[in-house]
Length: 95
Image 1: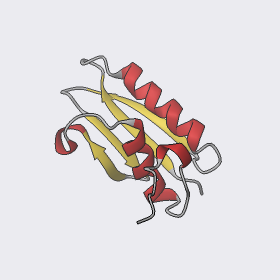
Image 2 (image 1 turned 90 degrees about the vertical axis):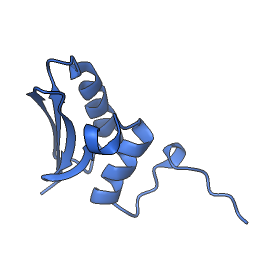
Image 3 (image 1 turned 180 degrees about the horizontal axis):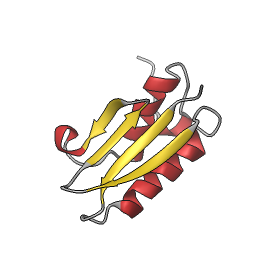
Image 4 (image 1 turned 180 degrees about the vertical axis):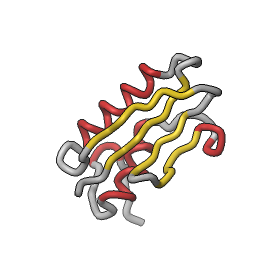
């Protein structure tokens, strides 16, 4: 079974568009690997992202919202650790 991502966002804070954009980015990058991305409205300033029930981002704990690079990296680390994310990855400079 393919992994599922759940993004819970605060509807009172109007974070639906941000959540939808993040879902779109994840579906674009991990289209073959993901089974679903679900948006769940909440209240009280909540913003969390879970992969198969495992919390990978929490707005209060992690200091705000993830940028795309951080979000894709955390999802990749959970569902396909050996995958190269291309231009999203930091460049590796030979020493």
